[in-house]
Image (cartoon, rainbow, N blue to C red; front, side, top):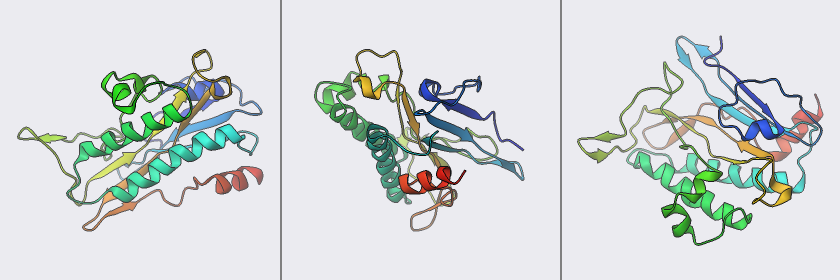
Length: 214
């Protein structure tokens, strides 16, 4: 059965973090974001993929998608025992802020935009949450006043995203209405990590080939 209410957002609906209406038509040229997970033996998965409705990313969609994907893959590679949990979000904020500057979404230095929380306009959430018997499972991030480090056996998501509302006149026109999130389920091993959802395609060529066969 479903582990939680599935999110299906096409076009501008994909820029809403937890879009629940799931009732908008999928149009040619739109990106479709689906956040879903199945429950098995009381444990739930939580996966997000984003792909073009017509089977082909536009150049600007591909640029944004590849940027988010590169970050997601680098974070998964970074996971291992002893890494501070909070550093996942810190690395994400730094990367996403640089990406926003590169896309002309924000102006200023990286540190200025981080200190002012300006990046939250387009990236308003955390990059990870515990995963288990609840889709947002309970777990401490601080122990005895100290940030918690990753330990073997921990399970959580990695889910960077970028969301640019269609009515945001401060954003470059070609970026408006783009919402992208890529999410996998990660378990910390003794020496690194295992991606439990690695079999779900996410590379641009894979996504285009898969949708093209539909």
